[in-house]
Image (cartoon, rainbow, N blue to C red; front, side, top):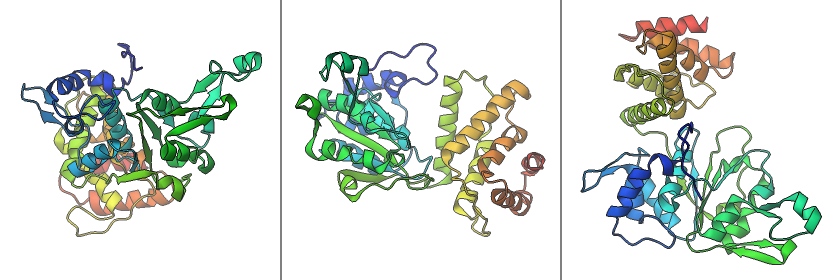
Amino acid sequence: MSVSAPVSALRPHAEQSYADELAALAKADDRPRPPGWKLSPWAVTRYILGTTLDNGTVIAPKYIGSRRIVEVAVATLATDRALLLLGVPGTAKTRLSEHLAAAVAGDSTLLVQGTAGTAEEAIRYGWNYARLLAEGPSADALVPSPVMTAMAEGRLARVEELTRIPSDVQDALITVLSEKTLPVPELGTEVQAQRGFNLIATANDRDRGVNDLSSALRRRFNTVVLPVPRTADDEVEIVTRRVAELGRSLDLPEVPTSMAEIRRIVTVFRELREGTTVDGRSKVKSPSGTMSTAEAISVLTNGIALAAHFGDGTLRPADVAAGVHGAVVQDPVSDGVVWREYLETVVREREGWDDFYRACREVSR
């Protein structure tokens, strides 16, 4: 069961941060709810996309993008199919996964974080070895995984970075998703999924170290592909909202941040990511990194911290230049060439970008 966030929690869970919004939606929600759901699919969608309730309560958007994508994801969770959120890094897969779990089950904490070292026990179950040696296999010695707990209690489990997990460990999910049961042969028993159970996984096929899903496992999922923000305006809105949220959660001093500065960072990231300038007139080389929206948010948040603690309290190009350089130049040789060429052929020629050009040139030396 999710617990209340301590006052000092650096990053409260979604169901803690947005408890008031979830309570207001639950009170106003008169639509049918699937078994085990805290809200109806209609209300979950409005929690994710944002709305204003009849009583004036404002529900902030948690995901800015296609309504149909969110509706398909929510509808999938109301069936017996698991949901796979697929996309390049920085497309809000984890954020959407967490908020879906918070809205549907009221608890986003049943989480398996996928890494190259994730073992099968993280998906199935493990053992308290002290009790196992003293008593032998028993229910008391068994340590359930988040997936097993979700099955037993009819809740949602989350698996982050599924393609980071070794392929043989991934396949431990096949029986769970197809038969809705998890055998425990050591005890001669099994855990059957209760109504309300489902699973949300996130994955990307862009980074190094990816383990492709087997066709047998992929068939157990409905796959929803999350695209990069469609327009610059969408990306600016996403970055603006997230930077403000992070600033509040980190108690950063308030720093005047002009929309022009945010739009400039978004423009740089979009042009390098897409390989063309915003006017479509010039081609530019793309660096090896993803240049994701999440990285743009990080650059601006770091810039605000620099401006607040080491600057004059106003976000300026010099505060973001180092962050942009670090995001672009992942490979000092090839990416360094790409960045310097972009600075000289695009940034230098742009009206009103002189301060940004000089700050970036200073960092690049």
